[in-house]
Image 1 (cartoon, rainbow, N blue to C red):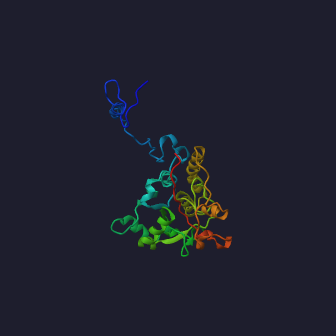
Image 2 (spheres, rainbow, N blue to C red; image 1 turned 135 degrees about the horizontal axis):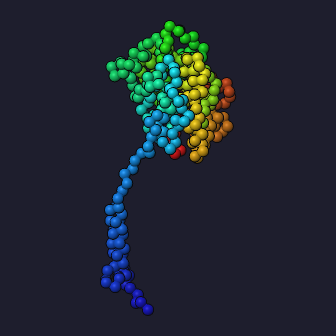
Image 3 (cartoon, rainbow, N blue to C red; image 1 turned 60 degrees about the vertical axis):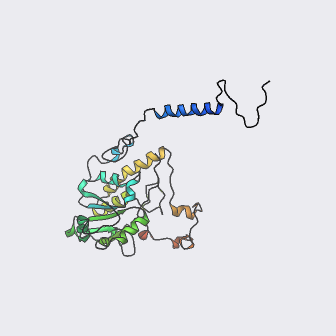
Length: 287
């Protein structure tokens, strides 16, 4: 029978080395071997040059074969944070239109010196800025002057708070005629939580505005196809349909507590369609 060791004395191997030291040495050797293994460089998935989606989930089959023939030019002023989001709608919008008809300006502040092209567009009588509010005209009811054609449309791409800061923080956006969408169409960007059902993504806003100005409803249908395909693919791979924030609050499903001044108690307390937010924020991608 093995004699009892004195308190605090560690067991030793036949060579007199302590067992703890042996384990530590073996662990060190394993770590050294692991550190010498070749490491493969991490790389991004190959991306489609047209739709900006990973090639395995390319949406080009749902884009028009040729860019849409439109006279109206879109100027997308995009908050810098939008470029980091995976499921963006602006690349799909741009892929549907000729390059010269969809121009993207990234930033928070724009001025005459740094952005002369955008400044000139803002001062043009042919330019409309799409932003809802009490001073905005309903685009569907606006009588467009044929002599001013072709028109330009400025659309702010960002969350509601970002869009608000950009609109009121840039004096250039005071020059164009302000318009809004009166449509009661529900957003088809169903993989995103929106303030209300009639709040639209940037792509949807652009599609509807173009169809009104160009007087061609087919434009709206064609531009929405890649968005519908995107949502369908995401739902097939684990995404869930997101109800609007308004719907969740109305049905007592909204997890966060709402301030009293923003609680919805009756339909009459809600904002009218003409003053609702028309911008979409983008949570993390499912993929």
